[in-house]
Length: 290
Image 1: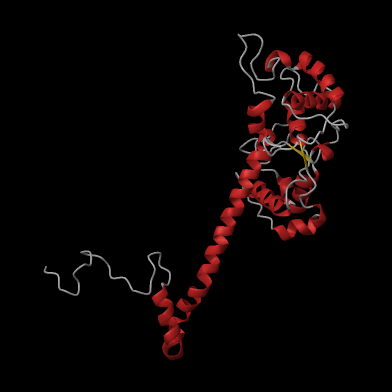
Image 2: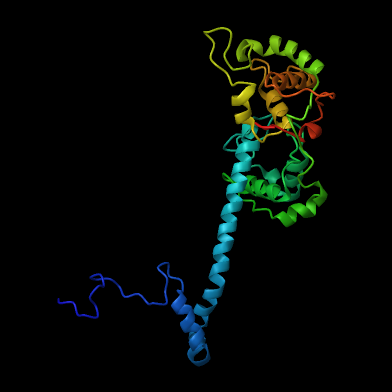
């Protein structure tokens, strides 16, 4: 069939599309202008389209905000929680509870407090802002098979004192341990850790027949632990090390070993020892750079 001049340029068998409709089915700019022009005459039938012009951008923005919140929560979980709770929320029972299918997450206020203040083997996270606590709370309540609903920043602020928002943090470069503490840690490390992690803390065992292990100092260690607190490091070390007898050292010995790790990484010593209190360790963040 010949194509007339007015139809030339239209794809064969293509459905004509109104100039007022976007490809996704929503109102285009011309459609919005037409709705505004006609509202006074035949506007009742066009009112739904007119409303869509104004409401659709807000709905799209809300979807973008929700997606950004979900991504932020996922990233925070992978960085701060997955080491102990697992990438699929499976946990390490009984020491670390599973978060997947965990009914205790149903009370949002309790989840918020656990994240900020810690509980049992879980370290606190005072470095997180109220918005980050909301994102992380939302993630653990909606990820995997959980369907407990998200949490807003306003809800977090209502549960927590807003003055406790992130601030006043120290870094591992701020002289947070003493030379004497690092020396004690070296002795503990030699007996409990050195066989697997190597004398240089580089993950290369002294026995060439043994498998390599994660490094505990210098650039590779700092790159892996960037942004996490010493409270998270203590909790993870206590949970998993020594490999053949986790949790067998005292809290003082674990913290002394951490001081030794920092010393080997050329962090400067100070005049105060690293504390064993997780709430204080949570305020010291591992950074690659000063």
